[in-house]
Image 1 (spheres, rainbow, N blue to C red):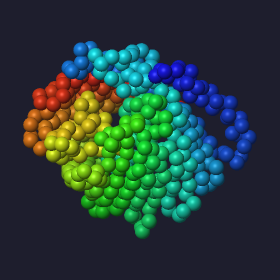
Image 2 (tube, rainbow, N blue to C red):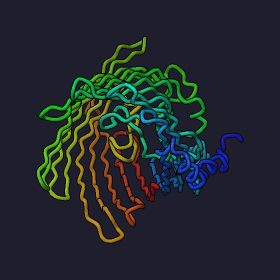
Image 3 (tube, rainbow, N blue to C red):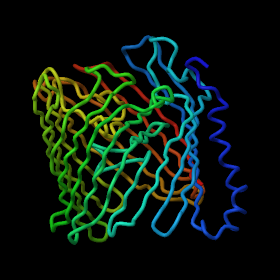
Image 4 (tube, one colour):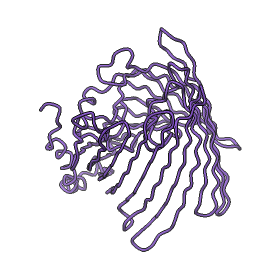
Length: 410
């Protein structure tokens, strides 16, 4: 089979769709499993990428289908199974990306896999336990998130406990032993080794939700990782997010600080993270200003390998890994809910501007503009057009990306 993913493997997962109708009769006949729900998520996307460091640009059309079901085994036990198939319809976008190094990699690799396989229970009062391959999202997903922008999910093989004890106090505790990134079936085989603990505790207050967290993350970043290709550090911090709203006027605020301590034997470096954000909404228009800093000491920098990286520090994905001199990201965003007309629903426009510079030296990195327009067709099919342009002035290369996406859940 080599490095190519045969189309029939993905088509096996696509065939789950007609199984819904085949199983419908059996479902109705079996009263013991009345609460079985089938779900499907189809997304087709065109992506274009042009990066100044490469001789050629790249584009690709990919289709992804997630199909699965969730069933109630008993009132306090649930089981969920989900498969994922990704097909490359156009472009050199196979399991290993483009065949040469003269064009950017569009990281939606052809793939077929078991995406989620989990069992959950509420046998402990006020607590839900989940065991198996699952999605994990905490707070704004900066430190731990599902990273679902790409066609393939990020999932975790984990055990997780969520609940509410001592009145309004909420907790979320998890242990992760495998980290399943989005880079295709060859990496997913066996997953990436991990030995990570997540602790998140939150409490509502008059000024907003206050959350304390400690994430002790030790994980491989590539298959068969060498010591230098492992991440081993703990991040401890606190976060505040609040909201005030009256009629068509609203204000939201967020703030977070954290310290990341290396667990490597050769270093005990400590690095900081700081974020502040404020939004004002008037009717259908929202304006947001955000400041975020990740420290770097010239050798290493604050990293968030489990976070949803795409939605932070620009859509062009230039800073998925924090530069060794750290980064300061100052951004403003405009959101406008334009309205709805008959078959065209939920039309929204967003524009965002980023200014990047080095945290350690204040050297200029560059500026970025992100634009998007999205909506729904006939209340069932979502579509979006997204554009990102990064203008490099001291880090990386000029980068231009375009996405055209249509998706539907059924």
